Length: 430
Image 1: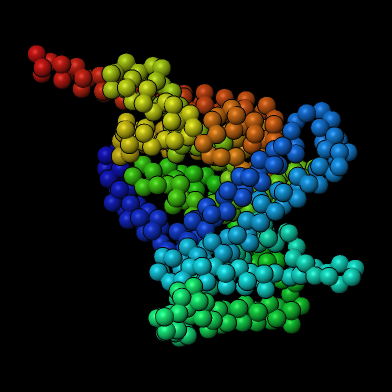
Image 2: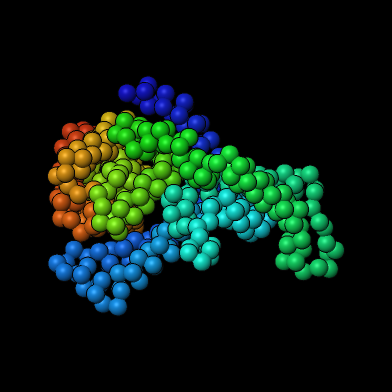
């Protein structure tokens, strides 16, 4: 086991560090994080508008169109994540390159709107479809944000921009400096839009969806693809890297798009199209944090016989209820602890399979597209994630029990090891 852990540390650690600091992946991760307040706020109103109370939806529909009002708030917050990401991803990458992030983000947002098709009403008034401003447009927003920042950076490196005298206020100077790169970026995406029209291709959003539908479905929509992501998350955490940031940079956007698809279906009263969403992993896979360590912390808190184990159980139990696993991760420690490697990888993988079977069979309701805060405690998170269905909480109880069974023999070995060390220390003191 020690040799295997050493192999992971020597081979995967450098890869994890590269992925975790790769500028484009960091820009995607941070750019989506900027949109999370809107996602959370929209989710809150989605919960309020769909409380599991008999007659509640009828009441909202019959009271001054309250349901329409709630849906308007959800569409304008949760449903705008793609639009926000087009700005924030470009801003993040430009900021890393130490160039004008605000101008780059604004130009990227404009480009996103240019490639997005308009819709016309009966009077020929134009509008932008909400469908493409949300999760459906997220992938294009990512591409446009990254490309905009790279093109802007190229113009800055080549010094192709308008320079104003030092006496000109910085805001004005930055605006003029962005004119040439901004013109080139907007023209570039406008030409793409026109070229697609000439070839009778509906729009770039649908084109990209057709091209990447199968690989994205495999990664974020299948049990096998999700299992790979979950196992890599645990392995990166185990060797001391932030697995959530590394794996989330790739999988986060995919699961977030699935979450919003479920949100749209839930609002329309239709069947949820996806099992694997960002809420699925937060509420049912990583209970207590990476490695599903709530079970281990629970065992330490209630059953540890060693003084160190009891102390760590007390220190980490309360934070871990809110899925803050770092105290346990680095305090026990779990990181680079060979005795805990197997349960740390197996528990979240088992959770994935159990939750998938429960939801695909219809025993438990699927997640309904509500993005709950990742710090929401178990039982509450399961109930909210499934749209107020008690089966979500019951599933979490089952998963926690199974995780405890997986961790228990390894916990005993760990606790016995600590007791021996403590006993040896006492003997030395005498």
